[in-house]
Amino acid sequence: MNRNHFIKSLGGLSLLTLIPKNAFAKTIISTKEYLKSKIVRADEGKILNVIGDIQTHKLVGSDTNNQIVEWVDDVEPGVGIPPHVHTKEDEIFRVIKGQVEIMIDGNTTILEAGDVAFAPKNLPHSWKVVGTEKAKMITSAFPAGIEIMFRELADLTAGPPDFAKVSEICGRHGVTFIK
Image (cartoon, rainbow, N blue to C red; front, side):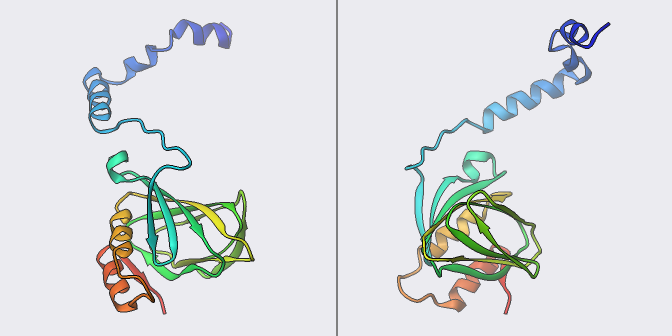
């Protein structure tokens, strides 16, 4: 029997017989109960000024059953986040426009449009917009939850940040700064 004939003979769903019916039905029902599809247009999302990091939150934990949060950073040259460590979430950084200097676990490089970096939890990392143009970066964190910290930071009074207050808020969410 050739491959195409074999695949056609399976009828598509015969592989599902390997999964217990109750388990399969339970998975489908729980997914439908908790997750809804969502389309977020380029100009949509909740905008937060997180100490100079202008973030547009596209997906948050309540959208993804706390699996992932994703936001777009729209940041001026010179703005960045100092070295810090997450104990709860991994992060992915994808540069869309501009140049971002990123440090992960002591290794520093410049990311340009199309470049991606992965910063696992428990590894120190930082980033800063370099060059002369604004940078746009899509950042994802998983599992979700860090968006709550960002909302708290965005609620701080305008002006130079009170580093003790910032550190206290971040610490409650498993993020610590490295000196």
